[in-house]
Amino acid sequence: MPDRRVMVVDADVAMAAGTGHRPPAPECLRILTTILSVCHRVAFTPELRDEWKRRASRQAKRWRKQMFGRKKVVDASSPTKAPAMRSDGALAGLEKAIDRRFPCEKERDEVRKDLHLVCAAVECGAAVISNDDTARQRFRRLAQDCRRLGSVEWANPSCPTENVDAWLHAGAPPEPGWRLAAGGSTA
Image (cartoon, rainbow, N blue to C red; front, side, top):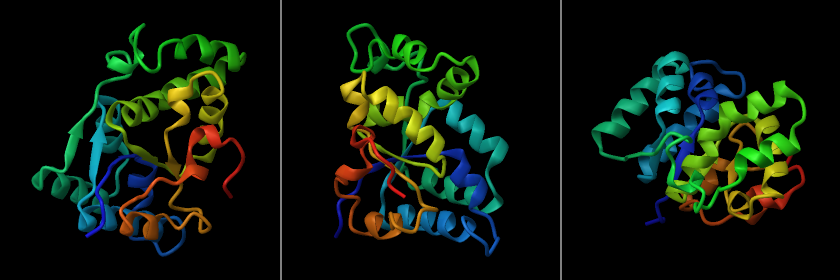
């Protein structure tokens, strides 16, 4: 039996996991199905719960209900309350790093909008599953200032070269190339 891990599944995966036959819909739905069947767990922050309520497809909402029913959901803190964000926490100084790395207000706002994903991943020892490679690249920039952030793995189910489904079936073993500290593009 494969190992089980905690995943932070971005709402963009939940939105894409519909009945469509064009990518990324089938890949995203397959990822959710695999997480459930392999018995991985998922972490939800309050922000992520709200995003899922607004954006998830009918199939993703059904999946989420099944995950709750099987008690496979981990409650993660909001970034502002996450232990990792305290002055003595693993992500201390991240706000200053955001201001330093992203002089453009629009980029800072977009990073802060997705901050809950990486905070939950650090807090729960989880991997992030998201279709958003722009956010991944931004967090890779931040990982240069925050070593703990660099250990977070970020997998993109809509990227065929990453083969996230096979990775999940194998128990989601450490994938060093997916770590935010890895730097370069994975595509």
